[in-house]
Length: 103
Image (cartoon, rainbow, N blue to C red; front, top):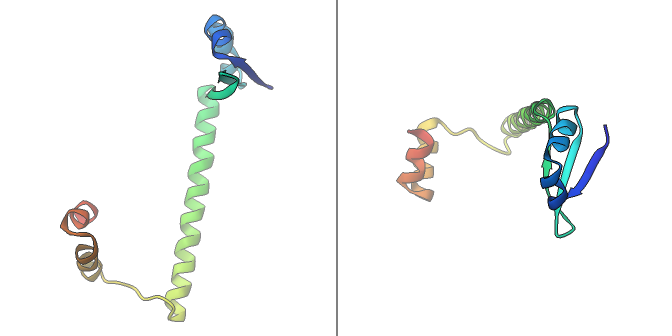
């Protein structure tokens, strides 16, 4: 389904049509002062986008872990035991930050 672009005034007057478009899988971009201001998506599209983002973030985290393990194995980086890491954060950032991170 195509993307629909309309002004906020037109959107206010055609709200039911906008909801129908979004619920059918379309995107509605609402502009204000001739600039895009908001997007209305159906809940199914929002759910799909969130799932895609979660998968991307998960794969990015996995890649960071893999690279970190490689750097530790090659000696570029070293692992920090939990207690040592907590003490370093307390030293650099203070007790408040360490308490938020480690409880």
